[in-house]
Image 1 (tube, rainbow, N blue to C red):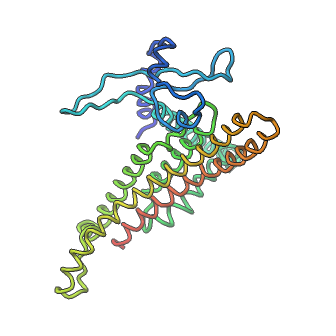
Image 2: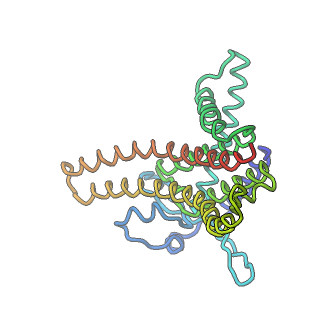
Image 3: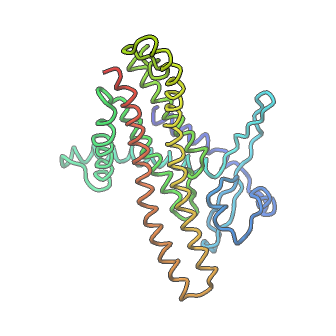
Length: 315
């Protein structure tokens, strides 16, 4: 996709946000849904039609801003709500940041290379990450002539990484803690994996679904076909399911632990006792920073492995 088309799509999606008139406080509260003031966990890890933004002039006191609500789309008897939510906004922010960072780093790398022969600074760091994911993760696992799938693996890694990191900043939210988001990423990966198999194996792709071992005698081949074909199909479905659950569970669990520890600070109401959960929360936050990188790495690694495995039958 061309850069101009992607930027236009992002601006088009974000246009209603600027056009929406601010709602009254009471209406905003009703639209955002009432929740227990003592519950700091559920509002953070769940999706909603509201965003938390800094208050003014007291920026440390957040307030909720209602996102625009669109008329639902009717498909037969089903009603589909396409209104933006908090996690949708975070996904758009992650996609925008990925474009700005990677395109900016690529241009800076080209400029630095012309000037001094090598990238430096922030562009050099991004180049190192790109080269590591491409050379050490994608290409060794994608198999023979798998370079064409490396951009997809890199896109997965940086998009998931930025979506993970957005949940660690104030007023941010972890979109990858929404199982609908991780399911969509897993389905996209599943489609790419199966298309890679079809492209590499042609008609032989059917052997990845229907077990038909020509080395066995016919009296053994037919029972094995009946027995193994459902197992092959289940095996195909468990791969995207594992990608979906792993990313969702890891990103959600860490935030719950951090927020629970922060809640203990206010529950004890003591500076002396509250220091223990405070230091523990800081330690878990440092671990969450590592997990954000780790889960993006694992998702990209497993995706490249799945693509390489299904392409292996053609070589």
